[in-house]
Image 1: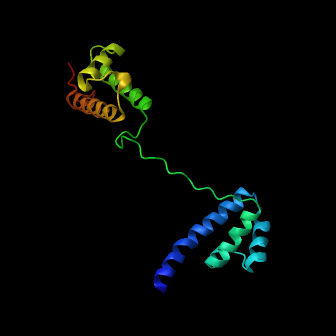
Image 2: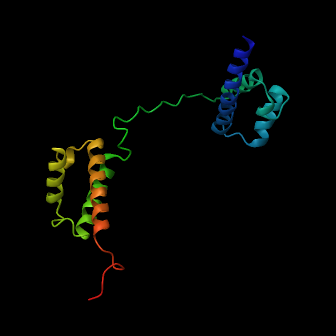
Image 3: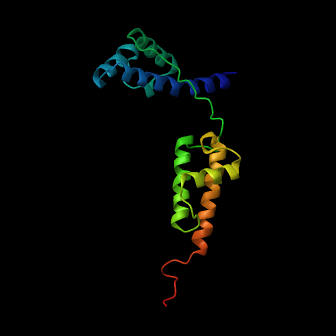
Length: 162
């Protein structure tokens, strides 16, 4: 049972030290004032040298001075884990890849309408209604298409002189 208590204490100590340092920052305490507070509360000038009881004592004092502990709310996971970019950035990347393919000669019509038609054919969805996952799939298809074109298209160094 004492092993469990030690584990729990060991887990709490780093968290308490972190909270104390956040409190120091939020209360705008300079280093001298902070150290004198530590010494006054525990006779130690470093949180690393303190035990959990002493750390709790310091944290309680910081709370009395106006420090409010707030818990960071975890953001819910995005619906589409694959879609790391937000949808607007993904659509910009799709347009960029489309123009790259046009510059390489793989796409004859660089217009927005041609791109919209391509996306509609690939996803059965209008460009403005794409989900993050659909946009990611279109991006991957365009990248793969560009790779194939770049692989088959001779570069300037590979061309034979006339």
